[in-house]
Length: 75
Image 1: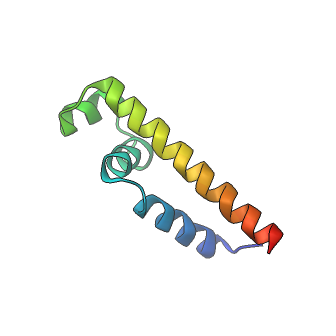
Image 2: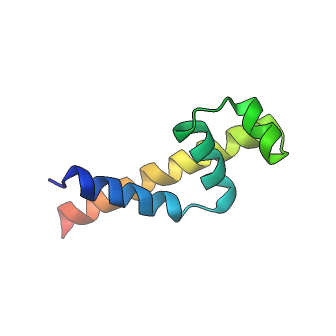
């Protein structure tokens, strides 16, 4: 099993690899806990665009995790 530090480092790398718009909204929504309408105002984009970026960012992180898990079990 990976240590908490290794897991955190992997998560940080996966977040850093996200496209900038996805990374920005993910950090603001998840880490800073800002409401979506506030994020939309800050970034100058519609709320639905913010929702889409958050959803896609989370999906990419899940895919990255699943890919790493598969590689660790297969290799």
